[in-house]
Image 1 (spheres, rainbow, N blue to C red):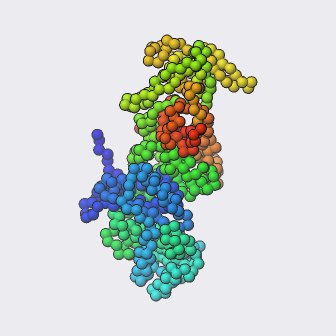
Image 2 (cartoon, rainbow, N blue to C red):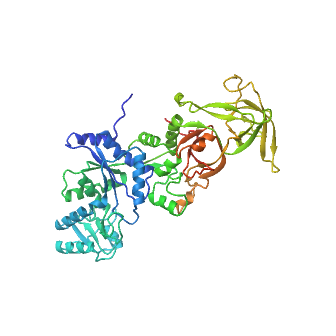
Length: 546
């Protein structure tokens, strides 16, 4: 087997290991203000995967420095998602656990003349910052004395000032070509209780200040993050150096994952939930990991997809069909086969004795001989898919039609002899005759069509939820002022039909291939009298491996 070439992160790590006298240590630092989506899955796979590959460890650290939208609910959900993907963290940490050390280090920077308390408002600060082509200008409060800055910062901590009235800023260079280095904010005032520290703090460190400190305290060797933090790397290094840490973590950036027809903005995803465009964070149309799990995506398939797309230095968009291909490939190997009818049409075998049943044996998975077989009953009245019969067939229609023959899977060849219709012309019932000499496995006569079915006497009513892309592509020339205008109107189709009896007791989340219909998994909304199945992915694969 050909050895996989190293990606650029692995090359950096291996170069560092030549001189680094310590184990590789990474961290995955999600903000607990929402549920993880497939983009986060790429990041955590990189963080945990690099540590795993080089015999190191990876911490899970919740970046909870902004209490406005953070919640314990998200903390628990994130832990469940990480474990679902098959990873386990070394140490569980919270950014808020380091608030005392961050405060002490901020005081140190003030004493060193590297930080000051500023009275500029947010708008004034933006005005003073300058532009990409013009340098910024110093705040009128930049040259406050160390003593005054220490006094004001302590009073900020003690709650004497209202929100937004003062900030603590690093004193770096307002003329720097990198705007992130133009005296960035390190602390802001927020009189908001924190889900971990309660009312202890009314000032909170900014991410660009807290994150490198947390990495350094934990002994992180490689701080792996997405590409938008590349311009923040000089500030990351400045904070670590100014605070006196040694050895220093190394920040390495990689491209984020973008998928076609998929929203990756947590802010937009929250809007979809809060404004009830979807049923919740785990709505199977969402790109969140809990939604994929509910829909029936195997964790192994998600990991396979993330491994295939690899790690890159430049942003790109991956076709969602590739993710579906990985899911389909996994389920084709592992999912048991069962029969279900999503749009039922009654089929009556006229020459079959009423009340007589035969047992039909069907393969559980033709790709896995060890999976064995299961049996279903076959009788006079069956349910078939409505689309499998046409009274006026189109050309090359090889399913059931007037005087046409098909095989009923695992059973007999039948011939259409008549059909009944409603006043509106809708076909209500199809009548056939069967040839008793054509039982499957005992007859060599071939017909072009094979139909799946469910015996009416044993059929269990069920609901089927068929999912399509949540987002549609904008039409040529279409101007969109809000992303919700691109929500696909047909992203969910609900049908009522029947399943074979064994499926009623399936476990929630257990995947099956419904013969000829696609891959389905049982949904938590299922009740005793009405099991609900989500279509995980269809049978047809539109993704081609080059």
